[in-house]
Length: 295
Image (cartoon, rainbow, N blue to C red):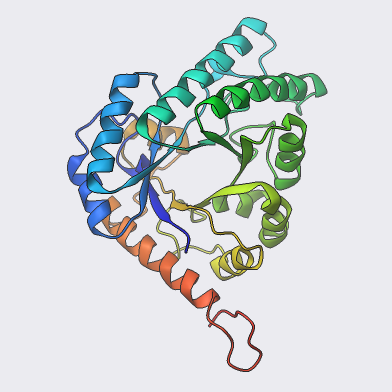
């Protein structure tokens, strides 16, 4: 069975608040892990949060982004160097909190555009930098799960084909693929084919609705998503990712201007129930053919 987690973005962007009640709520309601965003490199803080989650029996995975000051495709060599060094520190924090998986669009600056397609030089800068980060991640037993975004958030990797090409060029066992249904729904001609494309490298899946609300309450074809995950034999972690009006700085970055759900807690409960139903149904044998089928 896939382990199911909840991304903390609907509660926090920094993990600086007292989240004891939230973590306890998620564990009590059946989540296997939480996905914590890392936006600072305070090792002591991440060690403390790791102990807190472990005491509750919650696993931890992590995610991160890079701002323009840490972009691996900057034309400024000092910025690229700063990005590599920063990501190495983020890897250290991921290890400190007990996470063996660090996911996100780490290969370029988030919402940092030139107004032009990515160049071969930018691609090579990022690949070279990411290989160095992956080498460091290997020493910490952390795997990088690279996530492509939609064209309005980044421009280096925006589809499965580009993601696979990137991972193959980085060519390191600690650099693998993440898949987010929100971005795939926008950018792929076939979400199922995109999943099949990344399957050899896939280590993390984010279930995110087309409007960033509760999974199953939008228009993404999750029957197809879960059927394809079953087809490719994906048994890795699945996390719910959603965004709401809080925290306000994250709402501004993700362009959330109206409430998408009753409360983060209700979204988590309903989203988990939805994922469990879809995961169980897709694996039920068809009584006539003996094949797995959605019902």
